[in-house]
Amino acid sequence: MKTSRAFLVSVIVGRVVYQDSAEELALLVKSDDYEPVGLMQARRDKPDPAFFIGSGKVDELAELAREANAQIVVFDVPLSAAQQRNIERAIDLPVLDRTQLILDIFRARAKSREGRLQVELAQLEHLSTRLVRGWTHLERQRGGLGKTGGPGEKQIELDRRMIGVRMKQLRDQLKRLARQRDTQRRSRSRSDTLSVSLVGYTNAGKSTLFNRLTRAKSYAADQLFATLDTTARRCWISDEETVVASDTVGFIRGLPHQLVEAFKSTLDETVHADLLLHVVDASSPVREDQIRDVNAVLEEIKADDVPVILVYNKIDNTTLTPEIVRHPDGKPKAVFVSALTGAGMDELRKAIGEFAGNWRIENPSEPRELEPWEEEIAEERANLSDDNIENYLTRRKK
View 1 (spheres, rainbow, N blue to C red):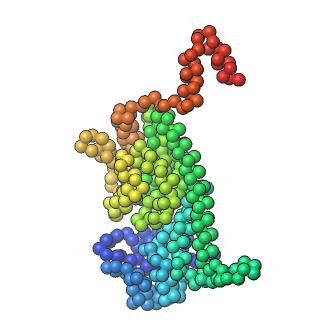
View 2: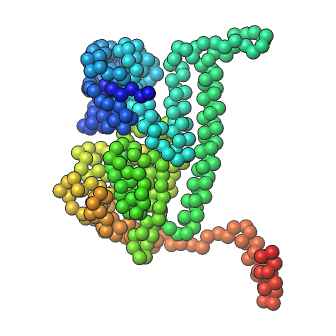
View 3: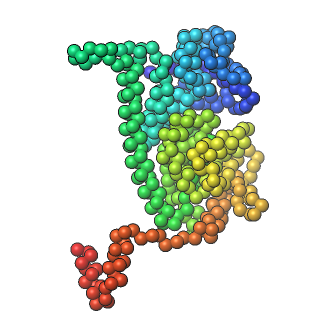
């Protein structure tokens, strides 16, 4: 059963300061079903190799966590295996770092088969880095088989090999699912349908906006990583325009690299989109930082060259009003909306429609290349006389 009382540690490293780091850590902890019971903030020019926050701060942490009757300590930074082990021994409490915390949330929220496979792969990749000097029980040796003798394999070597085998199986399964997704994507591109992908910081309201646009009923909640699985739906823009909209996993500062790698096939919907709707929480005081964090992930997955319209959501929590902001050339740059109340949705559809019109002018549809079997039929037909066409068609049906 999961421990419930968590003491939080927020660490600022170097000169980069995030105003909402403590609040975001509390939201992450609550999303993983823990109850925050205390907070310690620390600042370091660079991480301490042994304890990350230094031995003095660890002693202070042990006392504060004990006073708060905490059952686990959660850091908002990634820790090395040695740092995590050293802190656990010093404070006599289990320690969870940011990477494992996010992985746990993803594991609990993934619903589709592909999502569960991706999360399992990411967890195994993270675990494989913890085997070296991580757990002392993994240093046990197994004896040789039968009467062959010999020192045998260490338990750590057996575990590493089993993890490697399982990771290969997961990658093979994900490749098959990626090929299926690619086939579906090619089918949509052949139908000359504009592909629109919603991206944004987690809890910016992407799923609520997606439901409002497409009249879908995808799960949406006021929590971090409410949905992980990509959903695609046809979306009416106007009587002349219909697009395919895709809701994708939300991004977050310090998103573990293992997750970005594991979710590559899902994030391909973003890479191959014709337009990105970058959803921003307009009511957040750190929205500019969140925009930069999302742009960093888009650059990492090679989607930073896809055209973007910023969608400032949650204006019902501000004094902003629905409107379209334009580039100097008149093209839509940003739209202010409230997915919750529906305010600004007409403006958003108008902006998407304008982009679609310009996109079709700049990318005129061309007849697709014939498949080999289609070329064969066309060649046979070209060599037939009018009298034999009916017989030919009858023969093809058989």
